[in-house]
Length: 206
Image 1 (cartoon, rainbow, N blue to C red):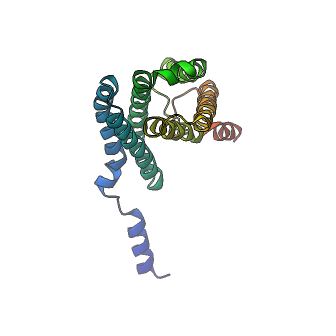
Image 2: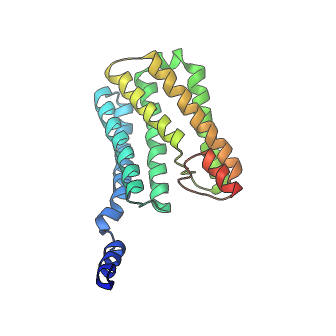
Image 3: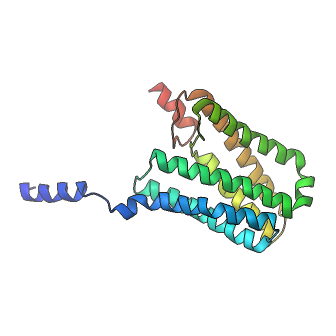
């Protein structure tokens, strides 16, 4: 390869990304965060269709910001914290909507939902105590559980209760939160995007 060709390659590889692209994942997360008051209103006011469609938009935005950040290597501490805050609020409000508009389902699955809520809030509390912020681990299992919860919630509002979908969601979500409890015990400092327990243990061995 000539020096001129090498120079062209180096120029292409080191060319800075457009600022709009760099900020795009954070903008999407911020929009999801801004939508939470409206989502809360629809839950309190018992507007099931509006609530379900807005929840779907929040779920798609969560998938989009993470996919863009990982694809273009745009992960950052600020982005991880913003994404985790938006996800936390959407999850809490989704729970409010379920209680307000699907009370029969809540009563029928009370102990299972209490266990899931306890694992979720316990992880949040320990993270705030240990790191003074939300964990932002974004493990594969927790992401899968969040997507399963979103699919189940939407199914519940659009098509009604599906037992198999509920139990798949519940098992994945419980395992994901339990894994994060273990990661909290292993990581002495706040770390974002750790992927999962396997990668934490692998890093500790290396």
